[in-house]
Image 1 (cartoon, rainbow over the protein chains, first blue to last red):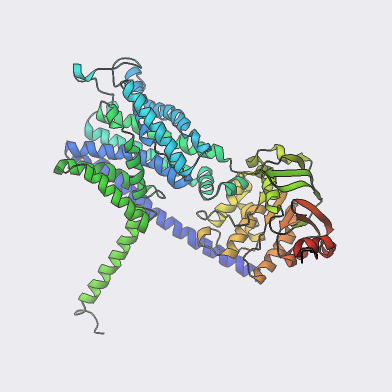
Image 2 (image 1 turned 30 degrees about the vertical axis):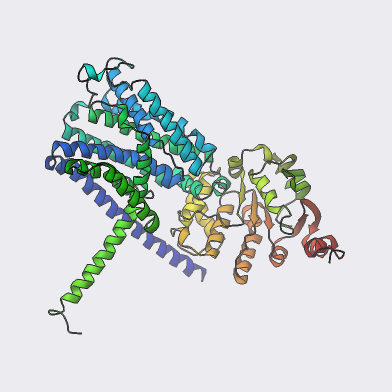
Length: 360
Length: 238
């Protein structure tokens, strides 16, 4: 009796792991296809305008990834991620101007420095949560923006503190890697870096920190009772989010060649939060969708001569739609609705084409 | 063995534990008392969620209160919650494994330890199924499996049978009775189901308004006049 039970459970567990592997295989194939398409085909299909827009989308996918980790995994809302991006952009720009570090090394160094700064921003998360954490991080982001504007957001020049006044001419460009100096090449480079950042996040999510994070999100007492050091794991999440956002900042600087403080308004953090919710915080695809909404949509609007304010309005409606009908976001809703639509179309096709088939 | 002496907790003017002193030797021990007697507060002190005003807790020769709360699980303190707290988003296996990976046990022993804990509580569901898809009974068992995996020293069960039908409670009772022998841990069971407590616990202590009013063999304790009064109210009041 007992033996039969364990054999059945073993069999069903094998079946489910095979099933798991199949859905993962599909995911893997889609990821490889998307990355190959983006790296090989996309740059030759797009105009320079769209290549730059797509690069910005790739960069913001990394930023959205960081915020998605905080919100979706640990349940901490940060409204300061764009300020962290600005810090990353600044640190990256200065490192690239002041040192001759190889580009990948400069990227990692930027990530690490931003990680330290961003973790400091996350410190209030140890005391407050929910709305209050959102408010505190928003205030901190505001403060960072003010400081950056006030100190003229060093945008170039020699050494660590060099600054070039724009009114005296075009400031020097932020360095790009030598293998990716053209816009299409830098787009490809960004896609690869973004892929690495997503893999880094995935590695965390699948491992010990990921399990600790979902436990914290569901119930801190339960996490504590399981031996999870809640303080360490919350800070770890902020550190990881800040690291990837810092790397994104460095890419952004190199992509646009010059950084200005107005590229990082505090309000952008709130818009970012909205689109990350729309994209979906429980899967990594959500971050890709969020980035597309945040960059491609306004890019199209600009091209069509439509005011960008419409994007903000659309995001408002979109968040409402997502929160009421699909709390797991578009990344979850789209495959489900597409499957439904497919079934519906299939059913219609069968009903409309009975001539060749059997009579009822 | 766990020795609690002079444990007092104050929340402003409320004193949920009032110089509580009790010793639990070994096996499965009961802790009963009317609602609001301080049972859960006692567990929260042991877990480190509530800091007591005074008192000491010595568990297997160590000062439990001196340990940071997350360290206590590593030491071997485990608990289940009144409202079951298995992690919905993780599978059964991951739920149990995450307790194991924050314990002192080695990574190499994880798979075997986890599967043995799952088997011990009598969960026959596929260990890879997500806990969010399970029913009340299975979730309870997952929580108990979390509490017994690896090398627990002290297992606190806070109303584990709440909301379970009778036959499931019986099964759970059998599991709880076997925990000390299976793992070597001391178990403290809080429950309102006197049948379950009588079936599982050799000794039982009774809390009333934060004071231990009786302790000893379960059958004797349940016959105790003070205990009857605490549960049923005094004759004068009636």
